[in-house]
Length: 258
Image (cartoon, rainbow, N blue to C red; front, side, top):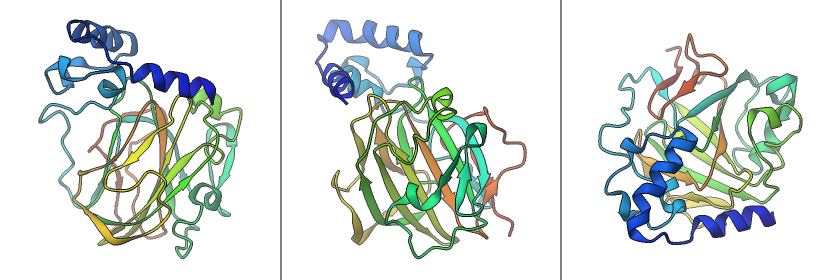
């Protein structure tokens, strides 16, 4: 936890204006991020932390327009594609996570057995804003305090990180039914911001927040992971999507059967 706080403190230190462009280009070369996607000018980002949650230039991401498809809410790498079975979803090396442990108090009235879950890992190279996969009402959120272990794929193979790390859970009500989105904090991630919601809010939102398909929902302030869960009868993984595949926000990752 102390390392996370120190990293956050360093990320928030202001960089002298003349050094910002070179510093962010160096960061992008080191991580593989695309500096050309960042909304210019680079010197407008006062710190590495601000650059990490940078906005993108217009047209950098396109949201799949097909209503029969479910767009990804984030950039990242597919870590798991799994049906909810016996109350759990499975990750690397057969490690299972009870869904209700992941979700806390959110969506307790929703039957999830036979539903589907996507787990997507965000590395430091990825765009770290999270967008609504559908036109929806954000009706419920929960901030669940916890640890800040790394969520890198190799770590997930060894320990049950997702259900013990700090996380924020969102309930999205769409025309086709609810979607549950778990935002899992990680090593060096002390801040998960939900747009329009107080950081520690847990409970119903009155009134609910309206979000268009592809609109910004939240952001991570360092690399992390999301778990998107659909109840039975909802979307499932799109044909051809596999573990280890890179995805971009707006790219179709699911499809509806009807």
